[in-house]
Length: 150
Image: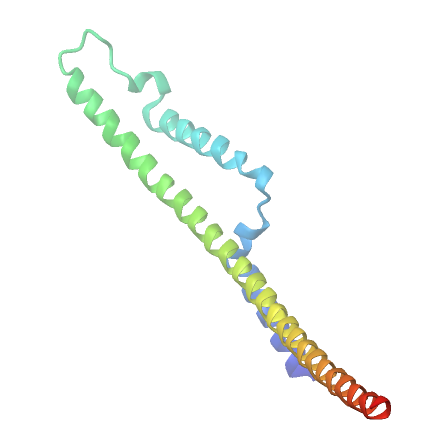
């Protein structure tokens, strides 16, 4: 008895500690937070790293403008690629979870359909048997009434 309770508690703790549990707790109307927070953290990082967000962009008069834009592209690419990869991984996990839930629901519905189909087949067999009995009864009554009249 205690082992069952302990096992259930351990299962609950494992579920809560998983990343998928965290993703399941995010409501659909809270996704905007991700799209607001990510640019905020990027801007905060760039302001700390470069002193000022505007200081990253080179002046138009510079000779090495292409090199500076390349550095800017490398910096932004280095920041955004892992973040976007992480966000796409989160969405992939959410999609897999939704597909698992839908698959469970569909399998339950399929099982109910099978049960109902079996009941329907039994009802049709019973109806066929009753129809055969009625037909035989009608044939017997017809022959009996034909003998009396004839």
